[in-house]
Image (cartoon, rainbow, N blue to C red; front, top):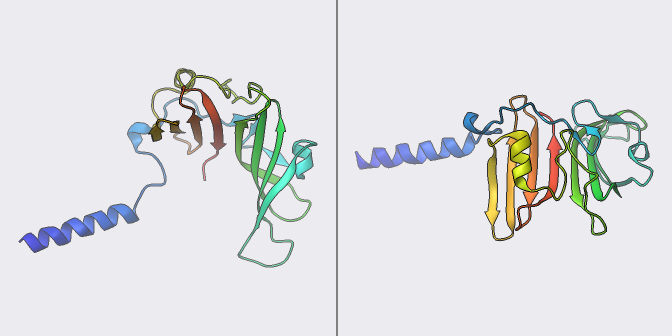
Amino acid sequence: MRNNFLTLTIAALSCSIIAWPDHLNENLVARTKSEHVLAGFDVWRGTYKTPHTLNAAARLVERWPNERCSGTDCGGEEEVSWEGRGCIIRVWGMYPGPNEIRGVVGVEVVASASASGRGCATGRGLALSDPFRRAVALYGGRYFVSRKNSEGMSVLYEWEDGGQMDLDMDRYGKISRIHLSPAE
């Protein structure tokens, strides 16, 4: 009997590890309208032609080609970054091939050393250096705390449509990073 219990316990743990959910439990899903805009970029409808059409100072940081085909016309993913509006802006995009329209799949802002980051806000006005309580006022109290220690805290908001917003706070509770991504 004890051996069967141990076998069932190990099997249950294996299944829970294998079937780890991609999304938050229902009781943590935010009930507010989802956020789609960060630093002026809409992660649901955003497109761009080349990195420089995002911003004149934009530079290509890294590119990951599509591994399912070969050649230069296969497309893939890319990260573009620049400093502006008081923050460092990073945009991740999917590019189908050279000189084709790219779709924005993620936007992140972090405060730059030279400015406050107040110009890099979400569509509802949550900005870098805002206190976390402002995020709760704008997006509600349903979120997942992924890290909390003496250095600060990280939380994840997820909406019913699958969109997600990650927030990092410093030890004083001020927002130091915002990352927004659409549903997969």
